Image 1 (spheres, rainbow, N blue to C red):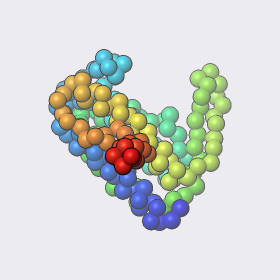
Image 2: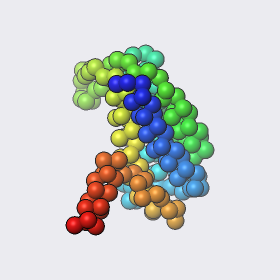
Image 3: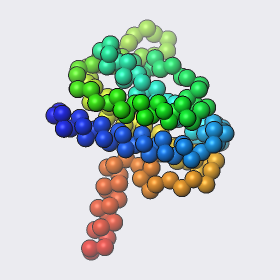
Image 4: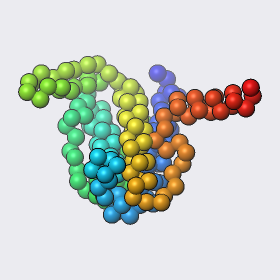
Length: 177
């Protein structure tokens, strides 16, 4: 992957994280941390915390060479204080300008065994994973925002870029047919 590609990737992540930050800034802390029945009794803040902590795990893994998303902190302040979350979102996308490098991804799928699954990956691949994962959680956050507030979200909030391109192509083909 070229440096330009990495910069385009960084811009894509920045766009999504800024959109998320702008959205949570429109909520009160009470709305941000309110349990939502439509989110299976979780909160918007829990979904935001989860996405932030995965990026934090990647940043730690960049330094050590080993990424393990299961070792996230689960910091309750992130899920209850939207200002802390917004500051961390800004910090995350500003720190994504590192060059690509090989990494090891560790995970464990069996709670009763000590077997760790390790695979080779790289920094850019994990940024892409985190970006897609964030968009997925933003789709859930959209449901939560609609349940606790009247905040109007952008049409593309929580929608994958490939879905937006598909919708645009289908829409434009309908008008040209």
